Image (cartoon, rainbow, N blue to C red):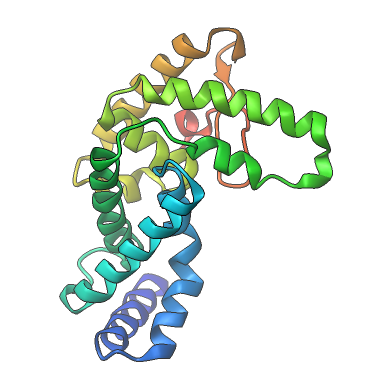
Length: 208
């Protein structure tokens, strides 16, 4: 019943957006804007680049919203559009960026300079480790670990089976463990989550 209500709400919101209702766009941004902006920041070289990329994504969503039919969730549909623009952005500007450093800067400044320095160092190592992954593996890590998407949502965004999502994550974790070396703690490794700059462990491997 809840799923039916949510799908109906999303279709109505999309219809209102297609009719250029200002309040509808505000509701969309309130619900999904932070997630889409976080995805942009994880794929941009600088904060300024991330802002431009986010604006590009929002414009693309506004132009395409009339095509939304509710076959997938609005979140999945919007994330798919955002990811396509992120991939194009990285192809245009392939230099390694500040993605994880930017996320580190979001951490509570009350932790103090020493803690922030540790986060910065860790995120620098993670940035390099992610850069060594294939695009397929990096994307699924970003979607699951940074965006907080479930296996099912990742599969919907990428258009692949859930089993393939799990396989790519497993292979990506293995590659990150190898690259991070001294940052590995037993069977776990310090990674990003959506609430902290860097966190431990990889919860994805035990997700139901």
